[in-house]
Amino acid sequence: MSAFRGANAAVGNFRTFLDAIKSGRVCAGSVLIVEGFDRISRQGIDEGYDLVKSILKAGVTIVTLFPERKFDRDATKSLSKGALEIQLILERAAEESERKSDRVGAAWSNKRARESGHILTKKLPAWVECQNGKLVLIPSKAAAVKNVFALAAAGHGHSLIVKKMIAEKVPPLSARPWSRAYVGKILRDRHALGELQPRTRDGKPDGLPIIDYYPRAVSDTEFHLARAGASERKKMPGRSGKNVNIFAGLLKQAGCGATFYYSAVNRALAGGQSNRVALLSTAESNQGNGVSVRYDLFERDVLNHLREIDPSEIFDRVEHDEVTALKGELASVETSISTIVKEMDEHGESPALFKRLREKETAQRTLTEQVSLAWQKAAQPVDQAFGEMQTLAGQSRTRKTRPKCG
Image (cartoon, rainbow, N blue to C red; front, top):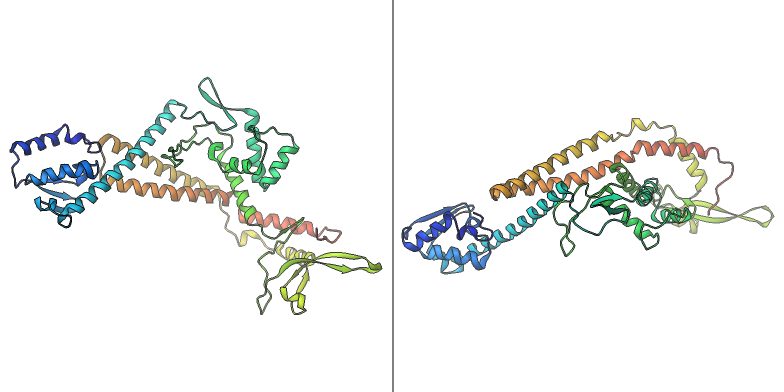
C-alpha cells in the first residue's frame, strides 16, 4: 500500500501492525525494521511525525536501512536526540513524492494523449485547425511557415523575412501583421515540429514534450537548418551599411598589438573631386603613428591566397552519421525513462529507481543539447563554408571597379 496519501496506515499489513501495537500483541522492546521512513509515511511532518511518534512512544524501536539509523523512545523527547532528523527525513520524502506524482501524472497524461489522440488544449498554432476532432494543417499558412524556416536557413534575418513576406503579399498567420517578434517566435517555437510542451498553471514545463501531437509544418532538418542560420548571423560582426568587414576582430598590428578598425576617408581626385575609400586602420593612424591599408586591396589579396588551400586537408567534416547516432542514443534514454516511470507506477517507488531516473533525465538533457549542436555542424560544415569563401574569392578577381564605401 502506498504511503504517499497514508493508505498504508489505514488498510493492509501496516494497519494490522499498528493495531497489534495498540492491543499489546506487539510489546515494548520490539523492533520495526524499514527501508526508510518514507515506507511509514510520505505525508510530511504534520501527519507523518505523529504516526512515527506513536510507534516510538509505544516502546517499539525503529531501525532504518537508508540511512542506517536506530530510533527509540528518546527520539521523541528532543530535537537533538532524533526528532529533528526524523522530521527532516519525512519532509524530504513528502517533497520527493509530490515531484514524482507530478511527473508520473504528466507522463500518463502525455501517454494517453499520444494513444488516444485526445486534444488537450484549444489553443492551437496559427497554422493548425481542428477538423472532426483531428488536428490538421491549414495548407496556405503551413506553406508560409515552411517559407519562414527556409528563409532563415538561407541566412535571412527577421527583418528581411518580414519585408519579403509583405512584398510577396503573404497573408499574416493571425490577426496581427507580420513582425520581427512574431517571426522570431515561429522560429523558436517547436510547435512547427509538432511538439506540445504541457505546462502548469504558472507556466512551468509539466513533464516531457508530447512528440507529434500537432501535424508537422517542417521537418527536423528544416528546423535545425534555420537554427544554424541564426547562429551564423550572430557570428557575423563588422557589418557597415552595404559593406562587411570580414576581418572584424581578427587583425592586430605586429609589435604593439593595436587592433585594425574598418573606416572610410575622402581621397582627393583630379579636378577637385573626391572619392570615399574604405580602409583598415589602427587608432594611432590619426596621429600619423599607426598603419592603414586599403580594405578592398587587402581583402582581394588575402582571399586570393586562401583559394590555394584544400579545405579537406585541414578540416574534419561532420557527417550526418553523428546526428543519427546521437538521436539513437537519445531515443534509448527516453525509452529507459518511460520504463522506469512505468515500473514505479505499477510496483511502487524505491530510492534506487529514483536515483536511476535522475541519472537518465540528466543524460537526456545532455544528449538533447548535443543533438542540436551536431545538427548545426552538419547543416553548416566548416569545409563547405570555406569552399563558399573560395568561390567568393574567385569572384573578387572579376571585379572591374573598386568597391566604394556605402
